[in-house]
Structures are given as C-alpha cells and as structure tokens.
Amino acid sequence: MNKSYQVLAVMVSLALAGCTLQPDYHRPAMPVAAKWDATGQPGQAAANGTDMGWKKFFTDPAMNQLIGLALVNNRDLRIAALNVETARAQFHIDRAALMPTVDANVSQTSEHLPGNLYSTQSTGPVTYHQYDANLGITSWEIDFFGRLRSLRDEGLESYLSTESTQQATQISLIAEVATGYLTLCSDNELLTLAQQTAASQQHSYDLTKRSYDVGVSTSQDLAQAETTVRSAQADVAQYTRQVRKDFDALRLLVGTELPAGLVEHARLNKNWHFPATPAGLPSDLLTRRPDIIAAEHTLKGANANIGAARAAFFPTISLTTAGGSSSSSLGHLFEGGTAAWSFVPTLSVPIFDGGVNRANLDIAKTEQKIEVANYEKTIQTAFKEVSDALAGQATYQDELNARALDTAANQRNYDTSGMRYRQGVDNYLNVLVAQRSLYAAQQSQINTQLGLLEQQITLYKVLGGGWKG
Image (cartoon, rainbow, N blue to C red; front, side, top):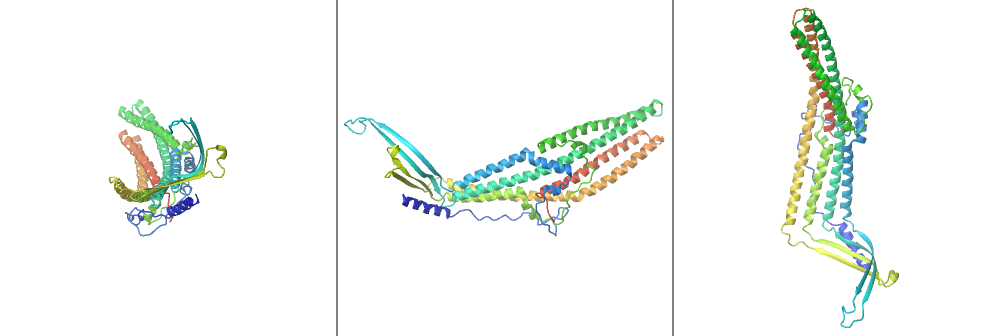
C-alpha cells in the first residue's frame, strides 16, 4: 500500500511538471494608425489614456443620480454580472480536473447461493456478507501533455472575456442613461417651444379673426392664420407623447422609478460641462476598451484550445486507486488484518481514429485565425467610432453657432414681416412663411445642441470610459 502511494506521489509530481503544447501567444499588431488628432485624423502629440470615473465625467446632478440608480437596478447589468459568476464557476470546474478526485465509500455486499451451484454434492444454501470501507481516487487523468491545463487556460480566458463584457455593458449602460436623459431634455425643450408657438399663433389668429369680422382681413388671411395654429397644436401633442416615451425608456434603463420632478426640470438649455478631450490621443488607447479586451481573451482561449487539440495525439494515462478495509463482519471491519487496496493505472494510446484528432486540430487552428480576424476587426471598428466621435466634436460647435445665427436672422425676418402686415404693406402669407421658417430654425438649433452633447457621451463610451491627458 505504501509503495502504491509512493508511485502515486511521483505521478502527481510528473503531472504538475508536465509539458504544454500550446503555441506561444503574441498579440497581433494594431491594424490602425498610431494616433488621432482632435478632428479624428492621425495626430502627432500623445495623451495618456486611463480610466476616468463616470462621476467625474457626468457632473450634472440629475444625470449623475440617474446613472447611479441604473448601476444598481438595471436588469441587463445584473444578467451580465451573473454571466460572470457562471463563467467563474465553469473555470473552477476546468481547474479542478487537474487534481485527483478523492472519494470515501462504505459498502455492504450480500449474496445468497444455492447449495448445488458449484458442487455435485449439495451442502445447503450459503449466504455471504462483505463489508468495505475505502478511500480512493476515481479515474484521474494525469496531465503529462497539458491537455487539461490547456482546457483550464481556455476556461480562464473565457471567464476573463465574460468579465470584460460585463465592464463593456456597464459603460454602454452609463452612456445610454446619459443619452436618454439628454433626449428627454431635448424633447422637453421642443415641447415648450411648440406650446409657446401654439400660444403665439393662437393670439395672431384671434387678432386676424377680429380683423376679418370688421372686414379688414380676408378669409384667406384667416385660413392661413388657422393653419399655423393647428400645426403648432399638433406638435404639442406629438412632443407631449414623445416626452412620455422618453420618460418610460429612461425608467426601463434605470430599472426603478425615476426621481420626482425629473421631467419638469429636464432642460437642455443649461450649463453643461464635460471634460475637454486632449489632442493627439494614441490609438493603443483602444486596447483598454472592454470589448477589445474581451476579444483578446477570446483569442487567447482559442490559442489554448490548440494545445488541447495537439495533446489528443499523445497517450492518455488515467489512474484509479483505493485503499481501505474489507471484512465479512461489520463489527470486525476496522480490526487488524482487514487492510485492502487496489492500484489500477490505465494507458490509452491513440492508434487509428479515422482522422478525428487531425480534424479537431485543424478546427482549433482555424478558429484561432478567426479570432485573430475578429480581434483586428474589433480594433478597426473601435478606431472608426473614435474617429467619427472626434470629427463630430470638432464640427458640431461650428454648426450650433451657425444655427444660432440662423435663428436670430429668422426672428428678425418674422418681426419685420409682422410689422409690414400690420401696416398693410404685405399680405399674411409672408408672415406665415416667416413664422414657419423661424419655428424650423428653433427646432434645428435644439436638435444640434443635443447632437453636440451626445458627441461628448459617445466619445466617453468609444474610448472605453474616458481618458487622461
């Protein structure tokens, strides 16, 4: 019995020191330019990328509160966290396969035989009893060629990939909540504008109606004035509906009831502040994006799987062993002279499998090449997203300035048209055209301001949670 466990100890040592057939891992080169400048084009200066806490980036109190609630209550984020727990448990299972499984067994065997079963002379029936108590290893594969270690490494990379996916989900959730709140603010501004426009046009319609009643205005003037009122009233209904939808969408993202008074105080026209983007962001900043980290862990897992496929060509050694006590009487089971043991090593050598092992290795190598392409494509997609966000950031402010000047010009035109109509110089059609142009310009200015703010949030998201210059 002592000799058998000495052999077992030697085999454990050999297994732990065994070789691995995994190919050496080398991170693929970045398939993109080295840097961006502030417009999304290749730049010269470099900035240091690091995690920027979301509370430092999203400083608006209402937005900050909503994001905090979402991180606690959002169901998609909970599912992502549970997926991480599942992947961690699976990794523990893969790792446990490297070690022997030791079981304790206590059993009783009773057998009754007729007297003439083994002899021509009947001696009467016989009943046998056997009691066993054993401690042993059940079919442990000794990992000489690293198959189990490769599977363990693959499980580890799968777990780490899932963990990074959870981080990507969290960053996306933060960006979605911030964008959802900005959309609510924007639609609230558009609703207020529509209400103000409807009230103003109702007043104009009332004046035109009185003029029509005394014969100063024509029926065409009255009809034209009514069209602006009805159009504005329709917009009020539309944006009222949209604000409610925005509220419901935000409540779903947050995962709980929203704070009281949120809609009433959701305004786009206030002092928003986001950290300035440094010039010359290096493209290797992308390697800190959780989705790219997840893609690289998946690639490493495919690399480890090649080692497992290679190990299938080599012999497999399994061991079953047990040691304990056996007796025909339960009362004498642990007395002297009842010791019993078994030691059963098994060697399995692959000789002919019809090409299955070769096909599995080819599949593993092909899957590794696929994951290289997926990793590179993920980086290229991320690079495009950052370039687009930087380009949007560089141009939205110019567009917003132009929109503001356009609104001011339309306001002057509307005021002049109204004055000329009241003086009898022009007809009401010119007033109607000017009013519609002003209303459209005001809507465009609000939408452009929303786009400018959304670019800041998009840049936070596509850079994997911020930057540091």
